[in-house]
Image (cartoon, rainbow over all chains, first blue to last red; front, top):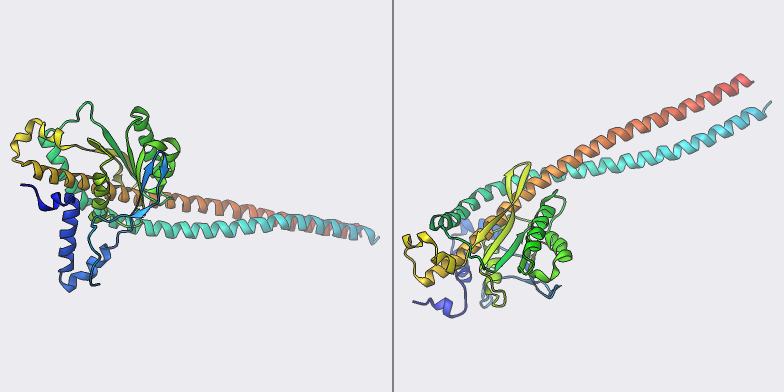
Length: 70
Length: 287
């Protein structure tokens, strides 16, 4: 019983982030300000090779197509 | 007859101007120290509000972390003797928080001295700068832009996912080094252990749980993100508390300095006045 998303190359964390993001999008409008406060990750990751740092690039768990709206 | 008072007056002016220069210096220093103490006092206020908020988030994150810990403890998972361990140092980008970052990098360096081949992932620029001087070849990933606000699970799972997705970075165990929030004035550097599926499956009490292999993989990834989230939030709370204490000490020291400088300034001022008086009186008595 292999999960379809696992076969597509995602790990569980990416899968659950997508589900969480979907939930956040359909939340009621009264809850949207609270949600908007917690959005917006700015984390940058740099991969290191042989003691040298690569360029920091923004990190995102969800590599899907960009949002069509908002 | 007129020569003496003139000479006296000139020397008085000379002494006065020399002392005035020192007085000016002290005045300048006094002004700058007062400004600094105002800045540190306001930083302390900000840090204490952030501490209360961070503590609330930490209490929630602790419950989640406790769940992962309980599972590992109940199943009695143990570390394999020849496991390849990844060290994750959880610090942040911000300074002025006392011994937070140096304590973490000291423990990391101690661990890396015993395990020189261990791969290292650093979260936060402060620890990265210190560790890249000592062990640059161990670092595999460094994360920045952390620590300005309370970490969300989205952020922790993004970091965990990046580390897990990298096929070249193979590890069995992970050891997360973070600062545990002991109280508003104390913190302690501590570590969380994360285990691979192979070790969980071999655990003595694992048979009490019914698990399929794929679901166990999901759980393990989630536990890793969970522990990382706990480490991040608790580290953030410890850092805010340490910043508050550091700013409080700085304000107190600045206050002491202001008192000392004010006394010095007053003494200098009185000395100048006394000298002037002496010159005038000797001049007058010479007439």
